[in-house]
Length: 417
Ligand code: LLP
Image 1 (cartoon, rainbow, N blue to C red):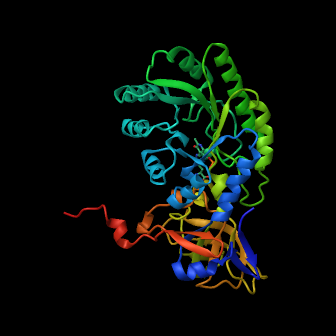
Image 2: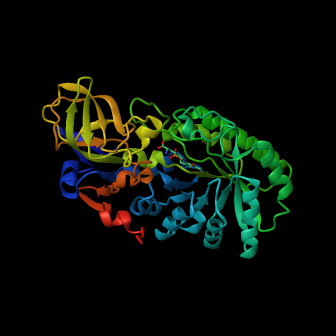
Image 3: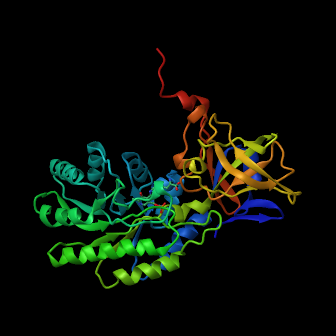
């Protein structure tokens, strides 16, 4: 569920007509609903209430400080993947013991910043990384907790670019090697303590089956490790919950929790979750204005002022995002069109062959739905386009949580001779 609803043919975000936002802030603009964010977070929290997991919002989905702060205030921890995300997490005052850090390529500088800050776990993805963390921790005279991210060789049944737990993927460590790392290296590295297993199998996963397969492998591994004396206290099962973009029927938070909990109950394990898309995906839309409508002998192009640099998902993954006019009086008659941006690439499209109202015209505002996750956070300045403004709605009020970039922002780090 989300709080973007049509009332008398006008699209509202909570109690604010989004056309008003487009008029006052301009386009392109990302608009988020605070109520939806919290609702999604609380749904997950409630579904798992019996075992009280640590829910670390995966900041890469949408790293805007205000979005993260809303979630942190509601009790979320944060899942980070870079020094930049650590910086953001610190800015919003997240408790360091609620931060987990994954990435196959953490640099020494990034490791040092995270050890100094005292994060809960590094999710370690290779032996050299574990050595690096130990070296840094020794230099800083600290003991750092780590989780080993396993690669369970599970097919997540999602887009191949966002499948992360097949043996050929770069992520995690195969189970045999993980076992060896935990059982034989634990004593060797004095400044780390391996006390968790982490597994994240991919993103936009609709069925609970792959999660359960990975979870079973993780629990089996933990039991074996414990029987050989390892002290594993936490299991982090990552993120990956799919959402509805079009006709998907993804598992609900309740269904997910009902499948997961029996496998870890009575195992004396603290559970960690890392949801991103589930929380923020349907809590955001991208508003764009129609610049021109171009009818050619073969098709109609609706050219808008948002582009692949604003929302890369259709170009990169062939992803579907519903597109609707924010205000629609005579919308019954439809015509198929490609919705495209002004960027100089034929891959610059937001939708292809989409049935949209025939009477749309220049100046009309379109809403690109379900754009809250991996929308702004994957946006760029390609074609020297300024990145969009971001707006957060709460009830009948809205506020700008990121200004639209200016032309001087575009060149502020550049030097001429
Ligand atoms: N944990 C780890 C270690 C991850 O790598 C990710 C996402 C998550 C948690 C959160 O996954 P989520 O709950 O959001 O599925 N750009 C792609 C998605 C990339 C996901 C990367 N990792 C897209 O637009 O579909």
